[in-house]
Structures are given as C-alpha cells and as structure tokens.
Length: 239
Image (cartoon, rainbow, N blue to C red; front, side, top):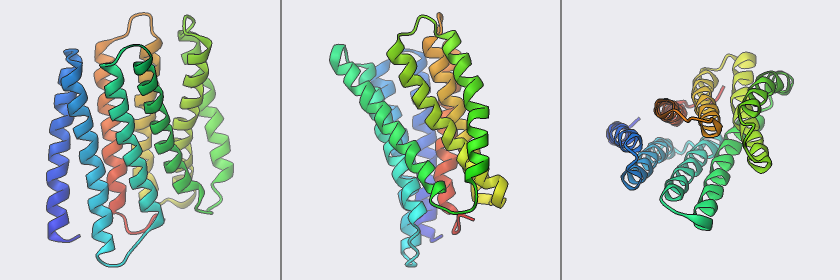
C-alpha cells in the first residue's frame, strides 16, 4: 500500500471510531439528531476506507470484482444507517418510509456480500445449505416466541431479514471451511458481528422492556463487523 493511502486509511479509521463513540453516547442519551449525524459520519468514514483500499489497488491496475462488490456493500450499509437515522427523528408515514428504505438498503448490502462468495465456484453450496437452517431455525423460532405481541407483517419482515443476514455469515463460513482462506476467516468474523448485532436489534425491538445497554452492545457489534469487512479489502486474493 502506498504511503498516501496508508495514512488516509489510518486517519479515516480514527475518525470513524471517534464518530462511532459519539454516536453511541448520544444514542444512549436519546439525543437522536446528534446521534444521527455521528452515525452517518461514522458509516461514511468506513466507506471511504473501502474506497481508499480499492483506489490503492487501481494504481497498479489491479481491479478485483469481489472488492467492488464489498465496497458497494459498505456503501449500501451507509445508506441504511442514514435512512434509519432520519427515521428516528421523523414521524408518521415519513418515518415508516425511511425505516423501509433503511431496511432495503441493509438487505441490498447483505445480498452483495452473499453474491461475493456465491460467484466463486468452490463447492460451498452443500455446507452452506446445511449450515443456514441449523443457525436460522432456532434463532428465528426464539425471536418469534419473544415477539408474541408483534404484528404479522413485522414478524414476516424480521424473519426475512434474519434469513438474509444469517445467510451472509453461513456462506462466508462455508467458504472458510472449504478453502481455509484467510480472507474468508476475516470476513466470517465480520459477518458474525453483523449477525449478532441484527439478532440483538430485532430481539430487543420486540421485547416487552427493551434494554438500553443491549442497544449499546448491538452498536459495538455492528461497527466491529463493518470495520472487519472493510479491511478484507487489504487482501490481494480472495482465496
């Protein structure tokens, strides 16, 4: 990596962590406008880290399609963060619209990550199809059991979303088991944090008494996953 991009990534990482910490603080204090700004800035920093790492490769005429997909996934994650932040400070139909837009953006990002691995033909389909229901079935049943008062539409949306995020972890973990790839190991760790974050988010949102501390834990997991996946772009080879 060139000296310029190395410094850029380091500065962006520090800025992202500072913005993330401020977001968690203001979110805990329920100062939602401040929290929304810092949430969006943190997500933007991690997208810029991805762009910097790709740009460094392009200087040497090394274009990797999978790196583009991961960077695009980070971008849609940032959009999801922004839409969700606006949702929190909006009311009525506008709030519902931004909430839906945020979910669509997050789902798109997760699907891009899944596509990254499924486009590589390394016989991962069988372990992936075995692992997905093993993780998804008990998790979704537990969440649905806790959310007895949740509407049918919310249950369906939550189930589909959990299937997608668990699928993202399952496909990368299957790749790791089959190929022993270092990049797959790192991505699986990031995907695990993402999955844990979303399970906590959905579980806490349907709980009778949501826990503020669980919200902070969820945010730490989410940003850990985002950082780890962003730094997967440091690898020159996916396998």
